[in-house]
Length: 120
Picture 1 (cartoon, rainbow, N blue to C red):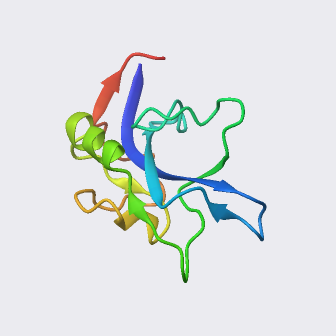
Picture 2 (cartoon, rainbow, N blue to C red):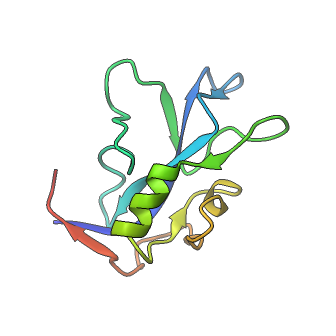
Picture 3 (cartoon, rainbow, N blue to C red):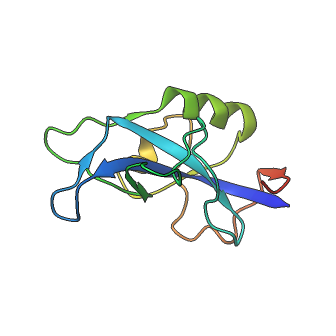
């Protein structure tokens, strides 16, 4: 069983470490499992492991002057429907984009389980 304890922010990017740029302004969410990482697609259904998909950063990404960030509305809707009470894990400013989600602590190992699901 997958035991969801938090939702991690995820940003799709192109480029390298020093010339990275976001694919778009949307910041997505993925499930964080108790002792099992962040498996599967984003909550809105984007398969981040598909061939040809841009790179991505879990918990952080590209931000600063001239870069717009906004929460993915579809991820936000699923978060409130299926994972109510789950905190958002990531670095600032990503962990505060989803206004109805409280920021998660950096270490999520002791957070309560907010949802239990079958394995994909």
